[in-house]
Image 1 (spheres, helix red, strand yellow):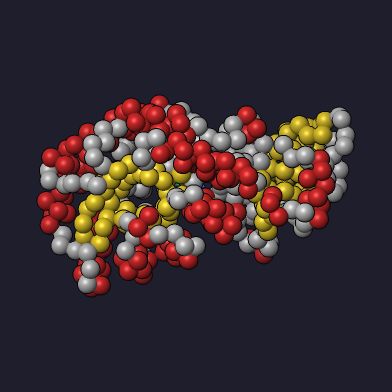
Image 2 (cartoon, rainbow, N blue to C red):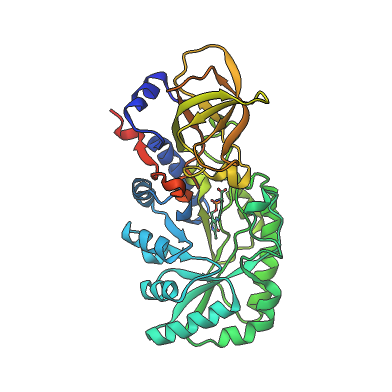
Length: 386
Ligand code: LLP
């Protein structure tokens, strides 16, 4: 929770903006690095969660690599100084120019998501006169027990290649002359809070890897993706996600052999260190009795509630009132789904109060849009506040 003193200082900045707690980001990185070192695991940061330059600089300091999902994300990672040999690139629909760029950068692996893509990488590598390292992104058909909008590894999902298709094509894939199939990749979904799901994932991966290796593939690494969830309900209770539990599950259930194990965390690294700070513009009550608080942010700064029905804990950080009331917090965009939350209990709220939407460091700024020609939100870093 923000101190009253800090909250008052935030009045100096134009709202809406993302506020980043740089100390918490560092503590989170210390935790994930410390816990992963116990097992020698390799870490990538999923840059789609937040591509803010200052956050990236800190993440790089801790030695993480990057997982990217587009040519521009790859470019951003390289410009931010990340070692290409610590960068992986997944995505169901990579365009030729994006693949050409990735091939030229000699990254750790392009995580291929279809058989056609593998053939294309082979052809483009031949044209570039090189051999490219790729990983097979497989669809393991696992229910990650999360919001259906953000699951990615069930059989009918657009992500990854089905295991059956890889089996059918195995001989032809091994013969492609301009690619080295060096790894297996999967990512079953995001905001996973039921960690036993990862146990099922390991059991499936063990069988898949064993069968594919018996067909003559040889994998240097298994990249198990990201997905570790955070506590949106009561972020104060768990500011740093439980990396230790996840790693211990993977350690106990994944047959690793001499392969490297890679993770690609997005949300777990940056969600809790960011909050969206917005000002109350107006209060009004609908004819049906809905008490609206209209804030100066909207789905254009934070689309998660409108897009996935996601919950963000909301607090009035400047109200001096002791009494609370129930409000519906809505944004400025011309969309009826632009509602941050119905019926939230807040300290009595008036025009000019500052409202915080917590746990918004991941998939907040990076999904912001300019609908209604809104300006993109700014960023304020805790270590720069005077
Ligand atoms: N690796 C791959 C291949 C991914 O597709 C993703 C996320 C990650 C890693 C990182 O997952 P994380 O550790 O953050 O769960 N916009 C949605 C989340 C979409 C996630 C997309 N892929 C949201 O706001 O909840």
